[in-house]
Image (cartoon, rainbow, N blue to C red; front, side):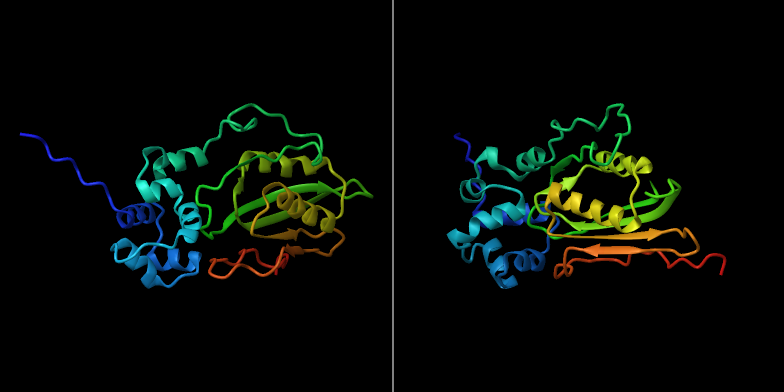
Length: 236
């Protein structure tokens, strides 16, 4: 008896599978694509299909390819795409013994592909023991830095960021210069959709100087928690 070949999944079934794998709700996918939620529901029930000009954006958001969505080509499966996007073979610092850079300018900031391009989410780094030097007295300055960003195509690799921030410990610059320079370096390296930094500096000379920078208003729909660092109050 000739075995019956398994039916090829429909485009709607592939969209549903990729959306589920990406942990997106129908509403989240619809908002990202700027379509009504009912459109996504109709696609997944094969009541109709996405417009051809929408397929590239849909594939990017779901971490797959247009070819996989249309034909189910094996090389375009979401699992294959995810593996490619999280490739770390180009990194030179992670997993290796690395000396602290001599200066922030000499430090290398490395990046890895964003595993969820097209999905808006927030990444936060906290550096509660940041240290630099006063450019006039050479005395140490200490700060608690909180860096928030919404990635586009790239994430900053955390070890390279740690080494970059550590390179400031022998760097002479005012609070304002250090805080904003860090933000601008990250902007240049990973081109995020949005970024902000809070520099909560401990007092020197009896006056705490806090520095805040953002590239603009936070994107709509992104959960941006409070940075959670209280104003300096001493023992009070």
